[in-house]
Amino acid sequence: MLYCRGMIDFLIIGAGLVGLAIARRLARSGCEVIIVDSGPTIGSETSSRNSEVIHAGIYYPTGSLKARLCVSGRRALYRYCTARNVPHRRCGKLLVATDDSQHGALQALADKVLANGVDDLQILSVAAAQSMEPALRCTAALLSPSTGIVDSHQLMLSYLGDAENAGAVLSLRTPVIRGMRKPDRWQVGLGGEEPDDIEVRHVINAAGLQASRMARALGLAPDRVPATHFAKGNYFTLRGGKPPFSHLVYPMPEPGGLGVHVTLDLGGRVRFGPDVEWVGKIDYDVDPDRAAKFYPAIRRYYPALSDGALVPAYCGIRPKLSRDPRADSDFLIHTEADHGAPGLVNLYGIESPGLTASLALAESVASGLGIAPGAEDAALFHAE
Image (cartoon, rainbow, N blue to C red; front, top):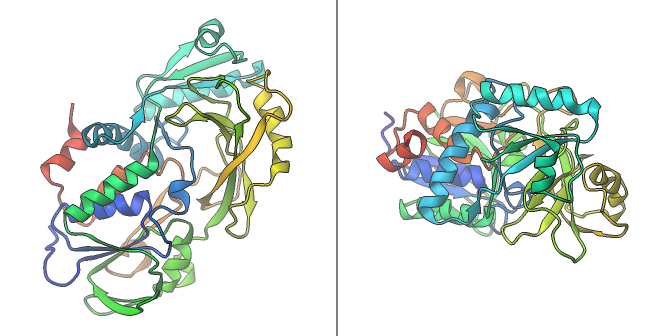
């Protein structure tokens, strides 16, 4: 096991859900941890701009990191949220076909889930689906009862609280400027109001949208760093009125995303999105004109949507490792074997289901470094 004493053991770059989950896991195992983020708050990018869905593990290629870590992470996350009183709810999700041509794709999803370790998916009749959601129009449906929603900000605060209680230190508005590998440690230059160079044994790059840029700043050769592409996802809410749905509703997936779907927050408010808009820079403005493409997509399963009912809400940006709509890009966790730099772990392409898989990603990183969990953290993954 790694001996975690003396010099600072770990610098975690990125205070989003995954960076905080990793910091929590390492600190609670006795390691000295510093978390830095260039933003003014924790989770100011991808982690605070998503659907807040706890995914079951349905969509991802069997055997992929996304599939494995989503399923194990989902189980651990529910246990964690219950133990820490993090607001969440197993609201369930309906996956729907809206015409007969989609039945084959829906059946393919149903066939995949058992191989992915999802054992509770239910085939519904159209009548049963519409009895659950009278506003829904569909020609076939599946129910995922283990899909849920969570307050992502409270989850981040809980991860951070656990990490700080175990001795971790958070420094916001602290960008990483450069890094250099020394014989037995990393020298990392930090910017901000009080620039400094620090020396650490290990660096964990969990910088999300900036992970590829950060890897290059740490001195990796360009051919050792995958490209990150930005997929902007816009969300719209309903203008007034009673929410039409009490479950999440997902149409068939589309290239680059899961289709414009219905999500709920813990207050029952309905959001539609995200779409897929490839962008070259980070921009969190929502163009109201994009609603023109939302209406026909939503009316395939919610025909009662009235003109003018959609109001711009917010958007998020997903770090994609490929723009090829045929590609199922996986999470990448690169270690010395991949990039040649000892003491460095890079996480690339941590998009959905990154929230669901956050505890499992942290466990994967820590176990890969030989750092055993405490009894409580081990129980998150092995409880009956």
